[in-house]
Image (cartoon, rainbow, N blue to C red):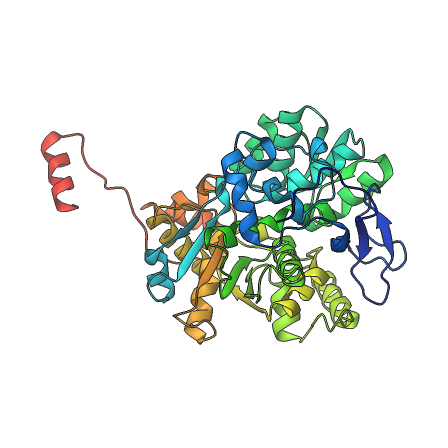
Length: 472
């Protein structure tokens, strides 16, 4: 069994353009978000032959007995051997990635799965309450290795909360976050403000904020941590490693994930591609990426217009044509699932590649379907933010279509904690029709089939007792 590496050099880890026809490469010490030669996104790549990689995933189990060590405690960095771009002494961790994979027949019954076959990976249990901490620890570590003093992001809420937390807890950098007007829940905004981030709210949505943060970061030399940063995705691929770990290293049949900026789906594809390349797994699961209907760029391009990775030659005319339609129609993303309320996903090409590697499909679900699925997740004891429930709603749709077999082993990713967006939860369950309409009616949500409404009762002992007896 191979020993863990103690150092990393730029000879064994490097950045490379994702386009096979280009292949330009750069050192890991460079701060880049795209290829100079062709403008495409970058991967972090490794010369695996020069690295002491374990010959079995079970090797990582020995880390469990060393949880007093920061790298072994982290659910990201205990897999350091599979993302060895930074020396251990430079790693910045706050104990991220201690997240459970929970088997639930309650949600499985709602989807239509056989007993014991539906699993929820609950990334809301991360320190900042979302999956973003997996990628942030990796990007922040890289920022630390290159001596960054400020780090920036555009955010619908979760990325900003995560960046602000890492800056605050480490005292290594200042966080600068860009948010759009009215496009962030208070549960998320409160985190960034509480953690001391410099918050810039611009007139526009996430796509506008993303454009501006890239321009500002380039002009002021600020380290950008959005998922165009290839090191972010190195951290996010460990979500799949923990899923395998929880399944005793057995590969599931399906991974179902919400699709916003498409960083998770891209990183999951890279994780399984590398594991298969290294001989650590013998097969790759299928991937389902689920858009909200109000932010459905990937679904439109992939399922409606036939866009494919095509071995590294996606049809750019299809992408450009759709972007032109968005511009000419002034179309803005609009969904209750604010974490995936994105029309111009920066990781589109990487996601197309992951869909090719994992024989993937893409679906869209309505806000009504998202909130109904969210209520079912909550009824099973795992509250999640609306965007998370898109994975469950999408799995239900795929099951009804017969794409997912009831006997398949399915893992749905819950990306964020319930308290990230409590307004939507309370509105769904409220008996106040005016409040329901105010928060949800404009989103096309007309009913709350699984609402658990508070019982209204007079302040009278007999009335209270009677109400409890009638509702028990």
